[in-house]
Amino acid sequence: MLLRIYPRKQRHLLTKPKPRRFPFMLLPWLIPVLAVSAFFGYRQIKSYFVQPEAIFVLGGAEERESFAAKFAQRHPELHIWVSSGSPEWYTQRIFAKAGILQERLHIDHQAVDTVTNFTTLVDELKTEGIDSVYLVTSDNHMRRARVIGEIVFGSRGIILKPLPVDSERSPEPIEKCFRDGVRSMLWLTTGHTGATFRKN
Image 1 (cartoon, rainbow, N blue to C red):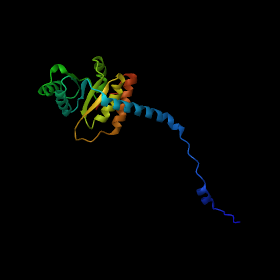
Image 2 (cartoon, one colour):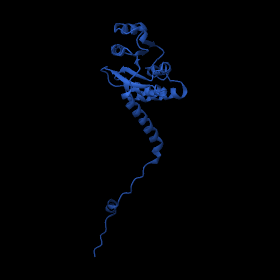
Image 3 (cartoon, helix red, strand yellow):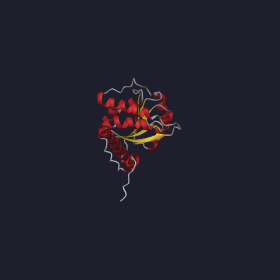
Image 4 (cartoon, rainbow, N blue to C red):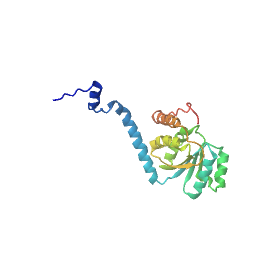
């Protein structure tokens, strides 16, 4: 009878590895992430089926207002809210050239950045009985706008349906989404937007 003796390293290789246990310390972080992902997923699916009741334009680029004016021509039943951006007289001229009646146009210049685009008008829209809007902004800006909008408008039950405007510009850095997402949560919990952090 032969007795095989394996070297220590070889015996180690032949040893069946122990199954790794799930790091339960990650659960406190994983659960909020899953909850937020589920929330945004639900809102995105819901936006596919909703028929918006207004057009919400984020000022800051003339092409957004021009796009909204043309879109409004095809939807004469919708009112348009423009948050900051071009001077009021210039915005009025863009929509007047498109044949949009003045009573359909609502221009507000309270906002100083993207977060306040939403926080300054969310309650006015809700008071008007609006529960869903077309969100008009540049395609490179849409990701950040949706993060903010889903938090701010979502807190009042207002659904967003994105209408990105071609800008031929690269998408904004993801850091801006995180920063303004945090600012939106700050507004939700304290009423302050942290607008002094960054104005853009």
